[in-house]
Every structure is written in structure tokens, then in C-alpha cells.
Image (cartoon, rainbow, N blue to C red; front, side, top):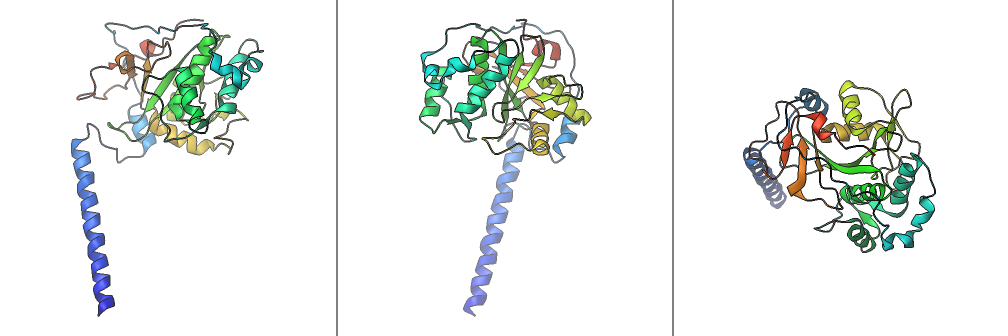
Length: 288
């Protein structure tokens, strides 16, 4: 009899927990500006694949401080040994520098007013780890120190608010090629012709189902790289893209531009962000 009562009690507790969880989920869905979609992520991305090229008022062009002095804190990491490169090779050398000395930790935090120096100091206090935003902020600033136009881009999903996003680097190489660099995975892609793949092209390739080729050294914290998992992950996080036009070592919300697809409503979203459906405006990074 006692065992029977325990079983009934266990079932009752499970039922109450389940119902409470469902109620919390329903409340979240009702209050969310955009709830998590029920469809597969790739289907949502393809549904919102198109943009609309319209005239943008109050245009803001990238403000990049290039060729800044090298911060003293980098010398302890033998930074100068990574600088003996020419042309596009300096881009990959900076990617190696970041990935050789700093690791990804998804729950890592970065300073409220992030800069290259403050993020590196934060890493030193946290086993040389930071999140994807921290890694991308370090890499993009290192590239700008070397006179290369680069910026971090936040890759966001459909839903708002969201639990997870990803941050990568959009870079215009000395040769004029555009490339996406992902320091979380020591990663970049080439296409079937051996050409470097930009973030814009990555989104287009995923939508079209085209196969891309990761660099052979791609790896997550030294544990290898899974192509299919990465493409699935980015299928979720390439629905909208956000960047800063003031790029002098900053990540301020007051200077953010967000590229949203045609038909995607931003009703109720932050008014501090400039939303646009114009890819030509968003992807204008200037010239080296």
C-alpha cells in the first residue's frame, strides 16, 4: 500500500511539474515579440531569404580606426611573431593568434565596455576563455590594427528575445576578397572554385544547399570541426545580422545596424537599433 501511494505521489508531482512547465512556456510564447518557430530552421531561413533594396535615410558608414598602436598587453603573447606576413596571410595569422591564445566558453562574459585590452584581461582572469563575441571583438580589432577593414557581426535567429546567437568577423582582405572568419572554430570557408566565402555568401550557400569547404585547421578548442553541425547551427543564426558602424573598439547598442529580411516585422523591438532590409547598405564596409 505504501509503495502504491508513493507511485501515485510521484505521478502527481510529475503531472504538476509538466503542467507548470507548459504554462510557463505558453506565457513566454504569448509575451515574446516573436516566439521560437515550429518549423525547421532551414525552412524558416528560406522563407525569409529575400531582402528589399530600398532607400535608407540617415545612412551611417563604418567608422574604422585603422593602424592603431599595438597594445602593450599583446607583447606577452609573442604577438610580433605573428606579424611577419604579407598580403592576405596576415589575416589568417591574426586568426591563428587569437585561437592559439584564447579559447571559447559559451557562458563567458565580457566587460560592459569591451575593448581589446579589457577582453584580454578578462580572459586572463578566466582561464584564457571568453565567448564568441569576445573572440570576434579581439580578432576584428587586431585586423584593424594591421590596417585591414574588419568588423564583428552578430548572427541572430528568428525569435525575439532569443536564448542563443553567434558572433563572427566580416573582413575585407588586402587582396579585395571578402571573407567570414569565425574565431570560435578557427574557421573560414572556400567555395567549389577555391574562392573565399563571405558571411553574405555563407547565408546564400546555406539557403541554396551548396557545399562549402572549411579550412583544414578548423577546430573548436582543439577538438575538431563538424561541418554538418555548424551549417545546421548557422541555419538558425543567419536570419538577421547586426553590426556596429562605430568600430573604434566598441560594441555599443546606440550605433547598431541590423539587416532584416523582407517581411520580417520589428514591431516592439529596440528603437536604438537602425533596422534595414537593404543588403547593399548593410554590407558596405568601405575600401582598404
